[in-house]
Length: 194
Image (cartoon, rainbow, N blue to C red):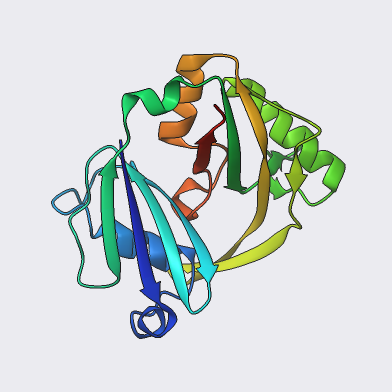
């Protein structure tokens, strides 16, 4: 896997018309040319670090550098995922399916958000230390795709985790956690606890 950090000034973002998460997705997809019919296989996260944005991009192949922003790419060492404990941060789109029509609905209540992250942790090979868990305030993120308006709920989760299943954990790191991954959600940011 390759981790790329992109810094781009807000004026350049406005000039490039990166007004929502879908526009970012399309701009980042251009860094993987010659694959118009492939499924997206990268994860990304956008952070507003005034006066610029920082984009973290995780991909199985290195992206081709684009003419916008400052791009730095490095390979993720195999040993990085061999630790037992990590500090983690996850920008997620926590949702549940409504029983009657299977429609996906955003979760906003703090107790249900805590249940959601604990459930996702169990499915993805790790356990979250409940005492360390910080659940950010849910925020709505609006996007336009094919002329239609959509909305995701965005929540930042932070804390300490312990790996319980190495293969599932590795898969979660590579493929992301939760829904909305094409819109900048699901990238598990990790810092080993030694």
